[in-house]
Length: 172
Image 1 (spheres, helix red, strand yellow):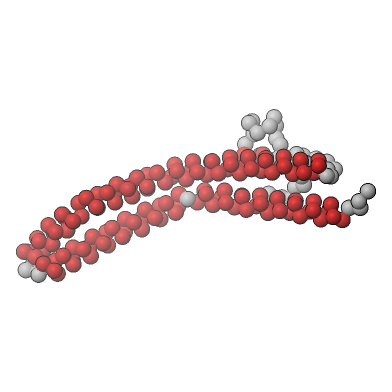
Image 2 (image 1 turned 45 degrees about the vertical axis):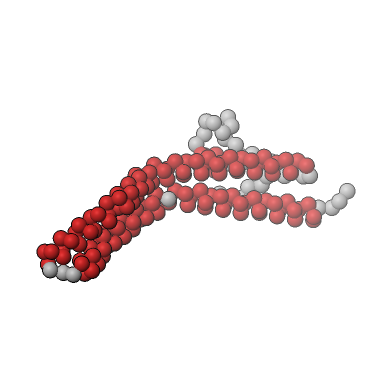
């Protein structure tokens, strides 16, 4: 994000926030003005903080939209698969186990264990696939978290610099 001082108008672009792209708003730097002091510095910091918060909300909104665009199918498949397993699994498992018992002359216990093992393997594969797809879809959310971390680091540096400047400045 770069180093910014409060009150420079570094994040304003064009005619406010409506007409520019999100990336342009964050990187558009104007000619710096002298740093304000006292109440002006607090007001400038508040304005910069509000602008930073606005950009953060815009980025989070975009990231959530992108996440949901990629994740809704996986979540729907996961939900439908879970419901189908819960509804049909017991009946299917008993039916297959009975078939195995009769066809292979197995005990009912052995047939049930074989069927349960196969079903658990298939269900585990579906859950792993869905988890992988959801993790892939969540990558844009990391972008918001990284941007927020950078913004907070910048805000801390500005606060620290202004606090240090005020304490070092001679009192009239």
